Image 1 (spheres, protein in one colour):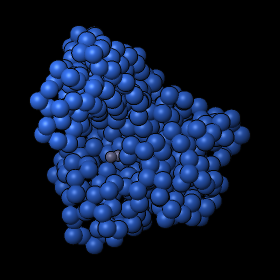
Image 2 (tube, protein in one colour):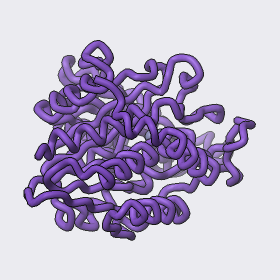
Image 3 (cartoon, helix red, strand yellow):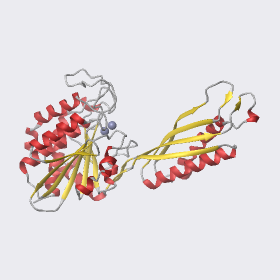
Image 4 (cartoon, helix red, strand yellow):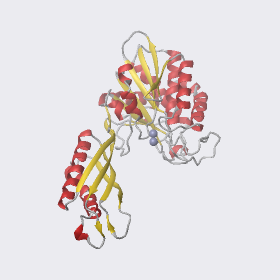
Length: 388
Ligand SMILES: [Zn+2]
Ligand SMILES: [Zn+2]
């Protein structure tokens, strides 16, 4: 019940990798230096390397023994378009780019586990180290899946991890079933009939229609979604008109929806289109809805969640593992991998003192003291899952 001793010994090396990646952040699908660094390290460890999967994604393949069992471990590599406010030596050298979500730490923890597993090979089967591009809302996981990730690299199960600021160091959180919301974006194009602002009777006022549609959409969560299901519909943009005395012909409403199952997300999409079209037609206007799911809801397989929680407990003790953390309204595109292969996504504490700065904040930094915990999780998981 502790950190893997050999991984504890890699701490200084892992910290150096992490700070190097932190100093050189790259946006989604532009992770060339990061992917190079990952590929070079994996090859050094003696791991077979495949490049260019989902554009800048990298997969490492490590086999031991003769079993056909396999497991996938995934880390994300991309940074955010944020100007870093930190002044420490490893701060971002790329203007307007920053590792503000800790993906530098995730990549490093998986590299640390890869180094250890390649040295020790104390398992029987195949490990796939999946280094994913573009997690931050631009479809990296989907790109890898569509590029044949799981057809080329069969995985019986797949596991991922994200740091959580505010949760103490050396703690893990695992949730069975739905854990993070799915997210969709929508646009509603309302068309009335343009007219002079002083002669409304000559037109159909698209601004008034947009106001009624916006209000009516708030009935979807309260009247169409079951009260026991959690969901959000937010209209976040209204665009229309550019003069004081013109009733505009067109107005566009845009927004986002969140839900914890594909069924609820589909229901919201259908209802947005119906309500918008119905309200608009009542005023003599039309409304066309474009509803686009961006993230699937993240749903952990109950059996794999149990398994992952057991591994966490081996490292930090049962009291260090939260089994019923609250649902998270944010989204995560590892959900697209979990749609293909059963598995589990867990949270690792980034600290409640120094590591408590929220992700996506210009002062955030991944806590290097968490590296041995996460790398030990991946390493122990493989040794147990593919036990000799
Ligand atoms: Zn993020
Ligand atoms: Zn993230």
